[in-house]
Length: 128
Image 1 (cartoon, rainbow, N blue to C red):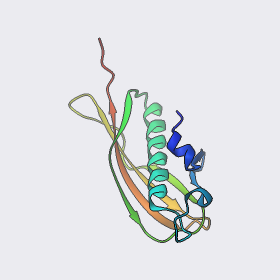
Image 2: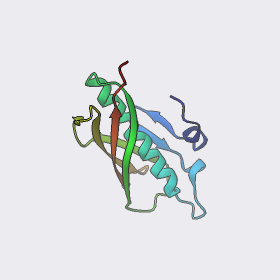
Image 3: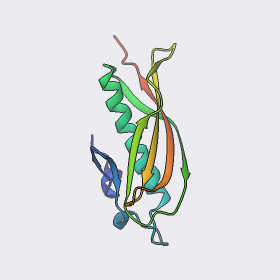
């Protein structure tokens, strides 16, 4: 899936995570813009949740429910958003699944600049 906003910010995915380039996302202080960090971290969490759900044989429409970020330090280099699962998918009484992810955004030296926690809902496909 192509996300135009992510392309405009120069965000790109790799096996390592989502890369957030400083050149496209610098604020007036010469550091990574907080909104770009949030966007890259959210994309990393979303993609990791997608992979986790597929690996469990679960399909449907994945949507974000909540996301909370803590900015730990000013980032003056490219960032890398690395997601890990916080929980296994949990089946809810309405037939949807919920899954939580954690993301650590690190700078070029591997030092954490932000941490995001996100919850996603996998909406069941309507059967007609």
